[in-house]
Image 1 (cartoon, rainbow, N blue to C red):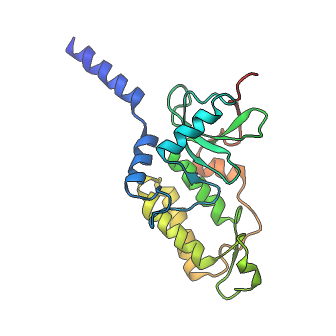
Image 2: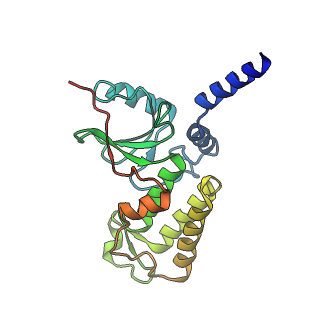
Image 3: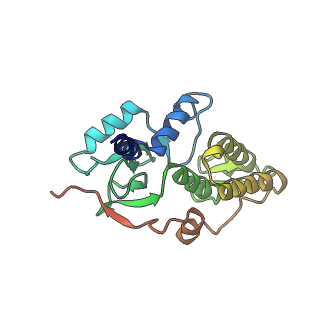
Length: 219
């Protein structure tokens, strides 16, 4: 009987425990996800939500989207949302919830750490921000669309400090290489070839990237 009880407790623990939640709470405790804090980690198109903001946003959009099994954790500049599944067959997987999408969402990453690393890869490939070398500080640098490579390296270095312990070894090797090249090669970020979904699928080992998922409620 005692063995059965222990087994049941383990099943309950495994069903309730969330590595995403644990990671997110740790990063909040370390102030990396606290807006306005000096240690806040900025990533393009991924603004972290605190518990109250997530609750309010979920309440506002619950009539439009089926958010019952989802935990919201970030938004982009358009108000689109990021969330992970808290239970079910997709537990821990991250989805991107688009306000204008026909289906409501698409699979983004297998978990929170992979979602963050995906954003780092897209950022460093120039998908959201254009980079100029430190000796090319011209008028375009005044635009919000541009960033110096030294600033980019600083962001990547802070990401390594904050997220490195949650990343897989392969991801840390890629991140370290980008940082080292950024320091030693002033042209390393200037890249017209944006990272593709195929490359992301391979690096993150996640075949569902970009696949639509029905999250909109039936009207």
